[in-house]
Image (tube, rainbow, N blue to C red; front, side, top):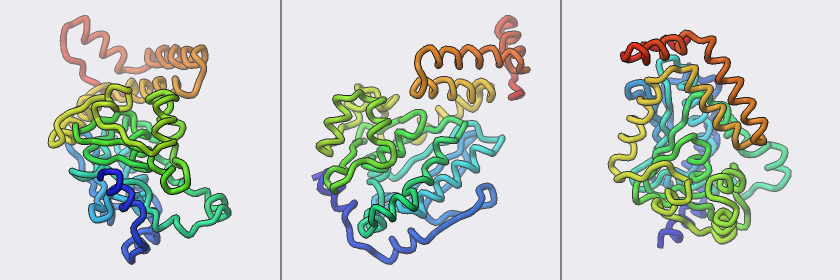
Length: 289
């Protein structure tokens, strides 16, 4: 039943709201104060972005993608924010791409437009991204979660890449990031069959960091974000970059990157403060310099 519901959400007929969504475009980042498809707020030192297309199961239309990237970029540039949380509704994180925008595309349309290139903005974010997932994270929704640095899931969460049922394959990184998260065999099974895994299995396989009660997912994610934001900013940024390099470099190259970043932090005021505070048995006062 869950898979049928997800499939129906992906295959619904084209509607005026879908057309309006596809036409929505923004330029710039920090100048945007209001959004049509997402809600944005700050809790402590954590930026929170909530996808808000409940009637379409948070289908990721072009307009929502642009708004997500715009809001994330704005938080990334905000010195008062140290981490960013992306979440959806109580029942659905995001059910995938908006199929009404893709059903009529040809190969040349996809290739010439470099379809999904807007997502690249998320991969350039330097601050930690936390996905707070309740309910279904399917297709592009699962891929969006995997673009984040940490995934927290409610125990009702379900993850899947059902694109094979539509005659296509994941196109936002699912075939690459899922393999790195759960291994080739499980990723192959999910991609080739369109099957889903629940939160417990996702945690066991290493896809998610932690499983909590559904009503506490966002609260837990924000608390984690604020804890990260309380650390030295240069250390956090370098730590994220070093860990991510493990996915793209050989072990020797990754160790070299880690060592150089470790050395670099000795040029910061926060390194001096952190070690002095440790020896003096007090809490460090970071300047983020």
